[in-house]
Image 1 (cartoon, helix red, strand yellow):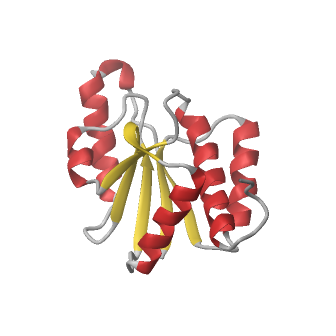
Image 2: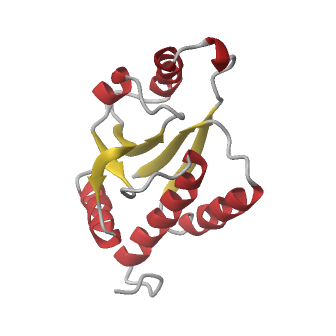
Length: 157
């Protein structure tokens, strides 16, 4: 199985980039993982919120094939504990999912067309975090999930 984290806009803060890189290196030992960055939509000051979401949707959907399993990172999505998330990933691998794509959208969330294409959605917390921080939290949780599956001592219950 391959896992991709698809994000809108580049990560800007150095401390977040360093943290993300730390977990990207660790993940290489477990899974074929990639971070795919879609450029921010240009001239957003001239666009309504709906227009911006629509333009982002076009860019997101271009990166997804019909065979991909797509999970949106969304505040209204399903919440998992770290152990339950590891179980979810294990089920996807056992179920022969070829490519699992997690998507972090732009500042206004997702256009309806992206929701229509998605297989499901997931929330990391009831709290709101910047989209930049969610990238780090997600890759850390992904690493944690694989360490749980391998029985390694990173996660403590």
